[in-house]
Length: 257
Image (cartoon, rainbow, N blue to C red):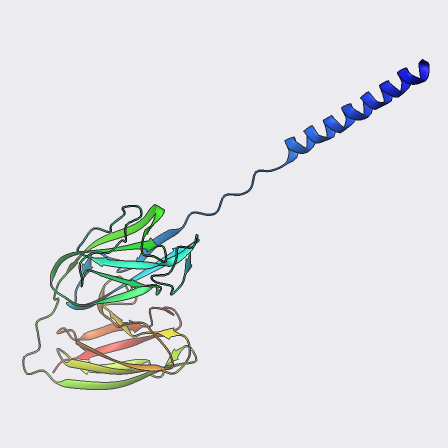
């Protein structure tokens, strides 16, 4: 009888110990970390005034989301592309493609898009992260800015036409100074000689807070032609590569005609 009682007590103790250990394990286990929320931010234009009619490049920064060129394919969590919008609201209806009228949106996995022939006046530019099938994310991710495009200088009247060859290689321009007459029609034949992204952008000064002209960012090796009108006021201006704004810079000198 004693042996049976002892065996029963031992079994009960083992059962209690197992239950305690299981309970401790449940208490110390950590909940899985939820996935980070996707974000998109417009990094340029940086101000609310663009003193140059014509091309306007919208550049963004994306976090916690994989940009892929799978437009029109099946939806996969955590990946997709960007829709760029001009002068329309970004659609956010669940299950419906986030598209608007032709000419008011563009779909790409690139983190910049250039709107051509933007007229003077107030414009809104929006961006939205979307799934491969063009539908909004379950929680829509949208950013929007409003800017006023103006012409800060009059069109040249009998001004000179200047053509300049400019190259980018080894994270540097081949020219640190460019000189043109005031009001000249400037053509820059830009040659990106390396397999990284570069562009040419002209600003009023080294703070780069107000742009005069911002060229498309291109991956190399590739050439592109930029055209714009030089400022009408003589002086020293500032140019740079927007992708490498501290290492690729120069002085744009405008002289009196």
